[in-house]
Amino acid sequence: MSEIAAKQASSDELLQLVSFNIGEEEFGVDILKVQEINRMVEVTRVPNAPEYVDGVINLRGKVIPIIDLRRRFGMARKEKDKNTRIIVVELSGKVLGFVVDAVSEVLRIPQSVTEQPPSIVAGIDAEYITAIGKLENRLLILLDLDRVLNTDETQLLKKVA
Image 1 (tube, rainbow, N blue to C red):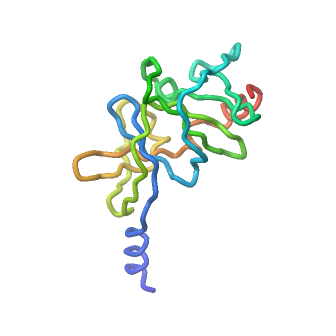
Image 2: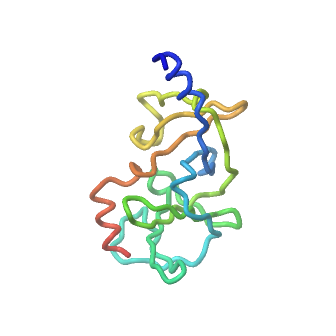
């Protein structure tokens, strides 16, 4: 296969994403990273945990840390409501829950409608962002969940739960 044909084939690859909202922004994460999506439940606070860690929950006998993505991204806290969800993922062999304002849908988008994020992205460190998806009437920020927490933070969370 020629280099051009290979590039064309890879750019038409479909990305399967779970899309969710935090504030007015819409984000997407690789569906293969998502284990499940749950309604908000009572979270047990953990003393001396970082401010973006809401605490822990018991998920079918397993204690997992819950991270508030709003706080992780430096956004104001928001009261949890009927739309608040916990997206349960596994990162580096550790199961975590990410609190988001609402889960929208499962999307399949061609990789060709995504582009690299601008070097300066307001509000959120560009290191978390893998791409920006250009959909008909909206932009979708594609997150790299492995980069949302750095190595030190991942080690710290292992101690929390």
